[in-house]
Image 1 (cartoon, rainbow over the protein chains, first blue to last red):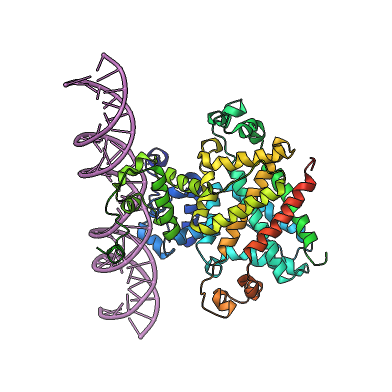
Image 2: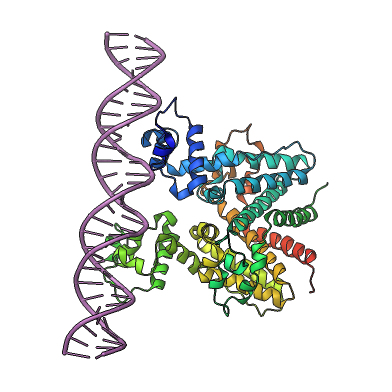
Length: 234
Length: 234
DNA sequence: ACACCGCTGTCTACAGTGTAGATCTACGAG
DNA sequence: CTCGTAGATCTACACTGTAGACAGCGGTGT
């Protein structure tokens, strides 16, 4: 009955259902699968198998697969906490930024969902947990004296930047990690020299990407620019 | 034999193959489908049907479906032109930004591919057409006197911002277009008032999103910030 | 002339997908 | 005890991506 020897072949058959199936357990398990195998490896049948349940039982807790994916994105985004009472709004936004980056690095396979799902659903129909950070940031900024319109602009600017940043940072994956030469490690040697001379010459710079520093630089520029372009106090 | 009466039911059976199937025709047709019906409606079988070919023939021009999607993204991105010889690098980057926005608005369903596909492939293995703008921007910026490292940073900052911006802008879709009240038009009335008071109160601001202006503001902040934080001439 | 090769297209088949609809099961209310 | 109902399960359907075998072709070397 050793689960590791049997369960290695098929995916975690989870032999006994032990208690009721809740939406939370379902989403947690789905997130686990996505984190391990990526989004397109998540199937209703596979998820059900991992939970030891019938595939159709999932439809009691998620209307369809799209809703399930929304749920996963929501779960991940729920880790993000905003304190609207913080008097230092820039510090609070920086905290949000750091949390968001942390989340993205912890769940890289979920990032496509985070940036992409909102395109499929109008704002008002999105899962509540997704709208929570928006409302909280608006709260934070209006308390700091910004108008609603300006607060919304700042929220958009921040999350636009954050989405762009994590997409940038997660692209920096290395193809051949145990190679010492940067050019080889990144596979850049396959690019024709006369077509991509600059790109190839930047191998060492590419190899030494520092996401945290890049985020900080961006935040400095963004928050500085916002403060000077906004017509409000403090 | 009226194609509109018959072809309405099934999807463009395209009765006679007329000539060889090229990669370009395949990608153009795939793009057409994606633009019309969205990404997840694009299937190998459906595409083959639209081309009047056998599904398996597609695999002569794309290794698998992922490669096909990469091809679509590449096709769209190829519309973007950079002039590395332009002496005014900020103007040229602004032009790139405007082109990119235009492309995203013309092919909204392709945007998920544009921002998401690079996450799945290391840089050096990406389709060549995708790397072209990068090399060209690097060329532009080094000619303007920037170091390679700085040029790369600027490229990342710009495209990170652009990705974030178009993701923002494309979310602004309206649910109920023929309604006069902004609150109803956006469906915001369904949100509980006590949980999302600020969001609901911003209905009119949400309804009047101006993507072009938002892009311009962002570009001002970004390019201004970059110029002052970079250690280079001009 | 022939044989050979590689490229393109076609056919069949397989394992897997999301989910509609019918059916079974268990439990609380009357 | 009966009934209704909510949940869980089963079956089935239409569809997916693609491996593998095979047919027709033009060109090339001998």
